[in-house]
Image (cartoon, rainbow, N blue to C red; front, side):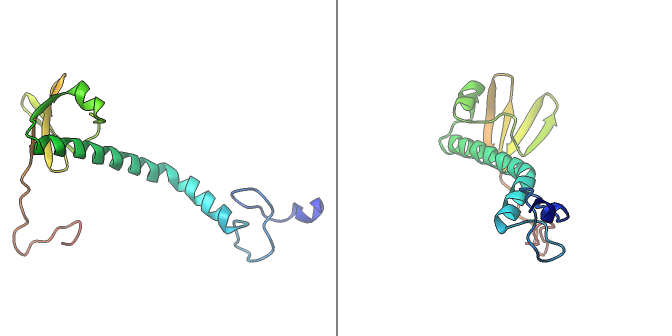
Length: 136
């Protein structure tokens, strides 16, 4: 039996000899194909999911603070709520302060606190102008 399998190609996932069939076959089963592609794509996709989850959590915390009228909070208290200070959507430096944004909410950050938390009023696109990214 071992000699029979010597010349056959092997599954990219499990290493078992491939069954007879198409010449371009790479996997012995649909399960092996799915597992191989899941592991192969998990790195980039997993990183995106992790970042989007952190942004979503930060946005929820900031949104709650804006809706309740809180304009500043100590960083340790924010971190205790689940806020990730290293996760934001944009950053701008203005003279002696740094402005961070998490989607449509802006805030400033000092060494010990986040302050100036407020929602940014986004300007609508002029009539006849389309969003270059989404075509809307």
